[in-house]
Image: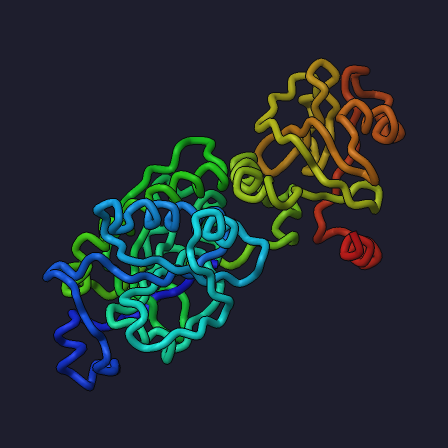
Length: 367
């Protein structure tokens, strides 16, 4: 999703005079020494990209801004970037765009999800810029925000880099800004904050783009990490291995898109309405509960589940249909009641996926 970057060239005079730069000499310029206002082609798709497009739109030269013209490339008809472009009367191109030499000065890629070929990049005399929501080289790849939350990073940021062909997120850095990750922040909340910060950093970069290109720096390979796409398999909890904090971070990272999951009595259960760490006071302290053990807390209508270092709680589950913790206890969990336990709690067992049967895995793949 977060497109990679590439070195695209230096100032316009260098492009005109240096055939080795890889650009044709057909760029009728009417720019000031600073290079602005710019003729831009914007590549984007989702709500994160809309924030940058919105700020560029408000900075068009008719209002004294840095943008002379602005056109948009999208991948499909039903994406936020296309809806914004149509609402604001911006020309829209289908992917791949059919553009000609001299039509645009700079490209901008924000959350687009396609590699750009070198022949397309070379049509822009100042290259193509990318807004990436991490402090590169940390979290290269399509899902940096999710992995920032999952790994518990306390500091992240945004990077403005140049696109390089054939690889994602490896281009030289033109601009970066730090961002402190708030405690208990979700991926959605962090994404909203970084989309705004990235948009403003992009405009700041365009203010002195030639200078930024002249002082660009290559990314270090030290500290480089990869942020792969999130998928449903990430939602499976391994109670024996994951701590309360790890489950909390996992929920805040992917919970709005992918349900956390476990297995109970050979069936897949989706865990909803995570409430964090639970303090269990009614359990028999003479023996340690096994990971995956479930306690129904009647007073708070919560299912508390034992993990590696404690207990975490959920207010609801999905087992064929949505069930509150009370519904799940009354309809299902009471069947596994251990008679020696206090009546206020009921002990069952959630099973980690790695312990499940092949039949269970096949059933889950059909959900």
